[in-house]
Image (tube, rainbow, N blue to C red):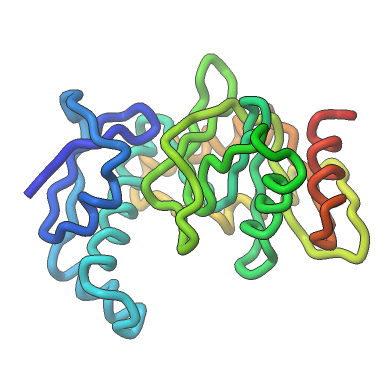
Length: 234
């Protein structure tokens, strides 16, 4: 079985065995002619199942393998996955990266509470990023995390935050070294030299052109205001 989706503007053919991935990608279907084809072998699916100790059904494992294949295939088209949560306010995207368990989803829910209808979650877990006319742009993907936060939209990135827990809400510019180190922990690295070259060029472009901050926050409502105002330059 197969279908075609548009991922970060790139038409991708997905060849699959189980229906789960088709349902997951329903909002991203396209009639465009695909330029990339991805699939998962039985061996890859079985290895993914063993890696998770059989915690997830085999169809979920296929979806994970296909996501991994798509992410690696899209690098040469200028598309990068950064494990993060992205929320938009008034059409601008704000990106939050953190170690697992720090509270990315909790933080963007604070933004929804504080900014109401102005705030829309673009993706809660695995957004894609491209540069469009020199501007870093965040794209929704079918892979939205266990809470299924996100939608099929894109938005220019206003700022990125390295999220930390703290007693007080404080935001300040991150050093390039901090930014690169954090981003490297939130990406899926390419497997061959050509893809790695494209990947590193995009990484360098992000660090050079996108405001990146350290945000220490205590997860009360003021955390959303402090991070928003800091990234807006208020």
